[in-house]
Length: 180
Length: 214
View 1 (cartoon, chains in turn brown, red):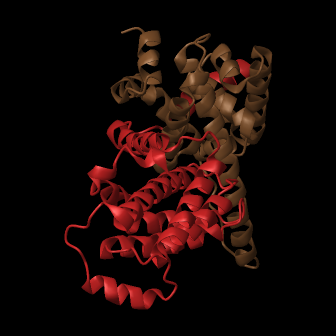
View 2 (cartoon, chains in turn red, yellow):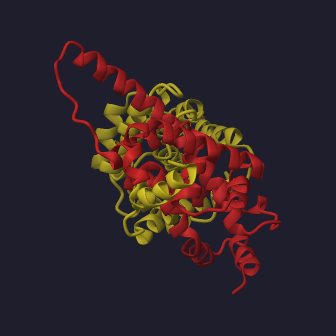
């Protein structure tokens, strides 16, 4: 069944049509949420929220772009805002932990390259991280990213370039490993 | 080491970054379906566009009920009387019918509100404007608890449960009480509040579909 007809059925309140639309798009939405959160529960919550919002606002979908594009813009907004709040919360927790461990002599083991890379990705500014994960990890095109994030293609390219530059800087001590 | 070499390294190295597990399609759909069902059920009840007006009408209906058929502020005495005098087949006419009609409308609104609240908390949205609807639903809950027309012990227990949950939500401060909000949603789930709300509505099929008259 073509997407336009499916969406018309969703608009008329048909639950079965909602499920069909969900099944067509859930994998990609969940994968992106998981890649960005690294947490199954959060990824599920963000994915659910994205679909609930999309179904609630289906009347606002004008069909000028594909449903997947529209859904992706909702999902990136849900994930981005959700992660910002979580980051604020974790920052507070981190500061508390830091305060508790002051004066301790704990030695932190040197992380290997992959751990360091993961940490460097986590530390990227939120928008750079979104663009980097969407492009380099999940394989989205700059056109898809820019439409999802409501930016220009050039902005997406520039943010990806800055994200890579920051990662390169963070991993400079391992330069010999990737050059070999 | 060139930029190209670094990009090639990245391409391989990030493949494992937060590698997603198998997509839990069914589990997520169950949650979405539940939320959509609650939303549809709320839409049937709602005949006013503004959510604020919607909550207001619920309160107004309960107030009319309280004024029209009397209130008993000394609820302890009422409970004792009504538990003894439970009517196994309560009539849907007269005061009982009006009471059940209003109570059903109130339970539907509360169910919709709690579903939305839980969805918001799960999504990390703590900037919600929950306090006012929660306070108004709390007022309506208390009016229903205090009515002399209450006949059903399970309904009374459910209203007590709702009162407890709504008090907690009404006290939340937007953007400040994320953890407390999470605890409230856990309490809602542990006590199966939403399930009991739906069961209560299902137990009164004769009144379904007429909420819109409130």
